[in-house]
Length: 196
Image 1: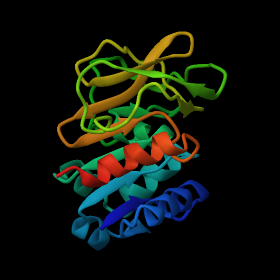
Image 2: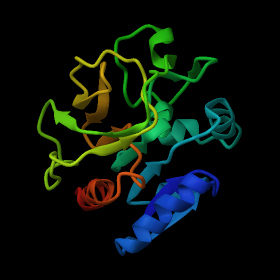
Image 3: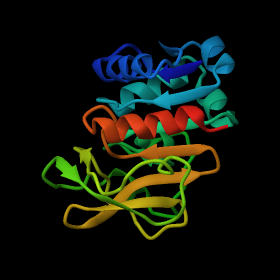
């Protein structure tokens, strides 16, 4: 079972529909029991990061989410939840990815024209094993983070080079939009669901 960690916002429902298409049992939830029982977790794109972080704190989910050992995937702006800090108010987040950067760097949204861009792998990745990198992915959100980092698994040039994907053990973050990327996004999501 894959749990999409969020209330049923539009983006969560789109990812749930894509998982349904792949035949993957899933649910959208922020209940502690569902998160604990899940085989995998997905953090979908978020519209209001401070509101989501506050909700996690109010529901006592922050500690639980920081300690999970199961595969986790952040998508688009949902990756911000997985960083050390995020949002314009520099919220303390889940710290799956610590990029040895100052607090301000985690919050600098990169300005670029949303659209389809090719990515380049920096290191081997379980997420991109069966995915053709000759086809582009759809990006509408990127952070201005140091892209030459050990956790970076893929980069994108928009035209400035930025992090396209992060990876640490069984924790993954992709800045492209899984749904809008079409077949490419679907293959990445399927790869995540098959990671053991």
